[in-house]
Amino acid sequence: MTSMCSNPNCSNVKRVEGEVCPECGSPAKDMGFREGTSMIKLKKETMNHRQDEAREITVSEVDNNIDDKVDCEINSGGEKTKKEMVNTSAGINSPILKIMVFIAVVIVFYILFTSLF
Image 1 (tube, helix red, strand yellow):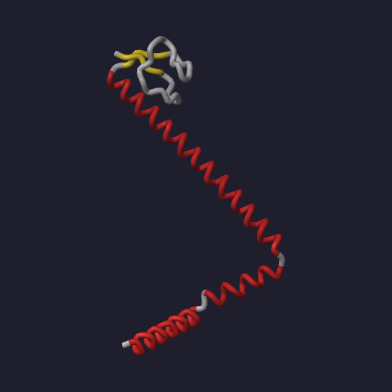
Image 2 (tube, rainbow, N blue to C red):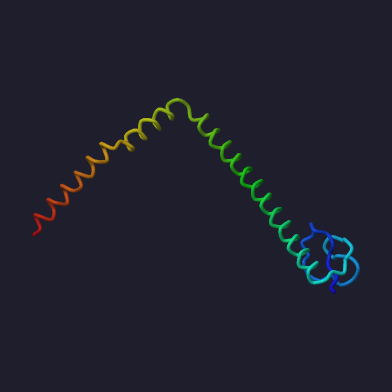
């Protein structure tokens, strides 16, 4: 039998020497193999659950900060910036323009290679 921390929220999974856990101050309890194994499993699940919650909070806070910055940049740009952005994105994403550029590149390479050989 070994003594372990009896607090499932404590991260100490090692054997405790003495009557009190050095990390959380909870009383140590003598546990057998099965009891100790189930306590370690419960503590690890609790730690993983806390880490997942912390990760969710962090991600949502970062998303809110990014959204605020983007909103400020868009709102401060004015109408001229918005029109330029719409016009340039429409020209770049045009499938006809992409096809024409591809055909022009193919013709240039064809002329280059046929004139060299």
